[in-house]
Length: 91
Image (spheres, rainbow, N blue to C red):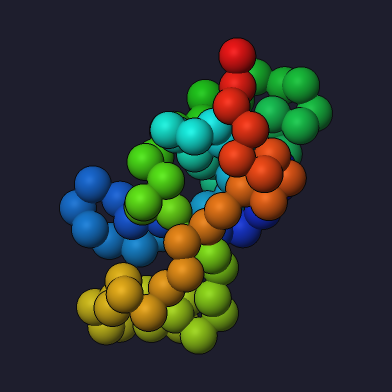
């Protein structure tokens, strides 16, 4: 799961390609490639940003090609699911 590439819907409704850092049932923590490398290496990095799960989608290269050129039909994307945790709750 950590490092999985996803498409997220930001607060302005725009699509961004990012990486998953962690997730629980209520929040998916997202970062970019540069910060992911820093975090994995244990170096100073910006903290991942929490996104509601309903704003995180599976990576789709066809949709990525449209980012910035056309509006995204969010209904065409599949919601990202944390397959590693199988919906276990964090404590």
